[in-house]
Image 1 (cartoon, rainbow, N blue to C red):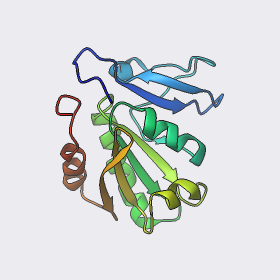
Image 2 (tube, rainbow, N blue to C red):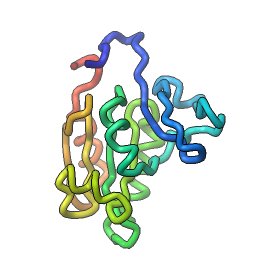
Image 3 (spheres, rainbow, N blue to C red):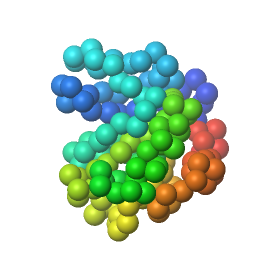
Length: 156
């Protein structure tokens, strides 16, 4: 369970896109462009981060802030419509949530495990559990409502 005190470090577990090392990143320092502990390349948390089947479970299970997952495919028209909306969410809520993208064609395990039958499907995870879901291209206000419906650390 996540420590609900305001001084608690809220971490994100991500794999470095360059050296593939798993890193725990302090979400409160997202504006500081945290770097990989191994290769020292930056994590860009102000945009959606691509994750794979291999990265998915550690990310969702070990991240202390909500994780918004976009299950998508490159060929999907509605997925392309959602891309700029998700870019805005990642930029505006950096450090508060982490936005990730899972290409369902290249990463079928995570998609199957979570019952993804249509794309785009947006799933919000909190403390390793699904906290909300939206299917199809949704307006920004509906996406904000989905995110805001998940309890914060202070409410947990």
